[in-house]
Length: 106
Image (cartoon, rainbow, N blue to C red; front, side, top):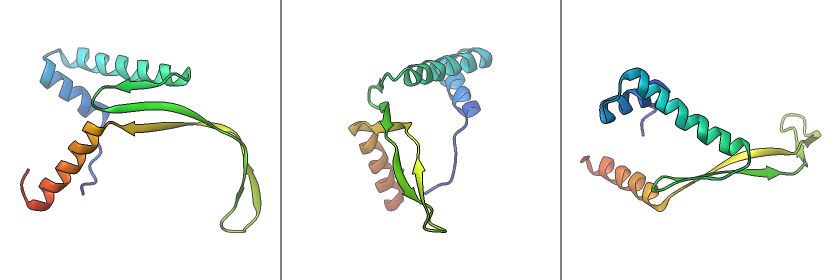
C-alpha cells in the first residue's frame, strides 16, 4: 500500500494532460467541479458520480460520549457528516488493483 496523496494541483495537471485545456483552464474546471459538489452537499443534496460513487450528508443526533482518558461522560452535539459510498465498479477496480500488486503485475 502506498502513502501517496493526490493533490488538487496533480488533478489539475491530469486534466491538462488528458483533455488538452490550458493549465489555467484545467485548474478552473477542477475548481468549478469541486465547488459544484461542495455546494450541493452543503444544501443537503446527494451527489452521484456514475462508476465512481455517491456522496451524501447525514444528520447525527446529540448523544453522550465518554472521554477515553478520564472516563467522564460528555455530550456530543448534533452535527452533519459526509458519507461516501463507492460504486461497485470502483470497488472492483480497487480490489483488482490490489490483486495485481500482490501477484507482481500491474
